[in-house]
Length: 187
Image (cartoon, rainbow, N blue to C red):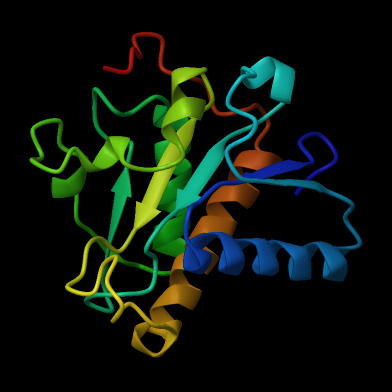
């Protein structure tokens, strides 16, 4: 993404989020002749932000289903928000690319599913890495045999990936890294 912040961490437990984001970044890096370290998976949870030299974690999970013009962005409201800077970058990126209507109900602390805590960005947020969770939320086929590639809305998946990419680009090329909110404590 930039000479100052060349590490991209991609986490996920399913193919749609990690595969599409990784392939998108790989193509961009080849086009721009950028040599970047791509970290995929959960094996880096033991290190903190300084040790990993990470700018941010952008987690995409279930990013190609449901209504074509809505998406969820978790980590935007306290107590889940750990970086107002990163949230602002994500909102700016959404306005410039995908223009999704953001469903914030999934990020609420009282949400019955506890959705914020159910994905791979949490260990990074706990260690002081600005983190956001991009999703298009649950769908009737979630974790069933019916959750197959032909049910993915590829146009929406593309828009989600573009939104995540621009958010990462803004974070990596900012004059300063997105700051962690001073009062952030993940509960």
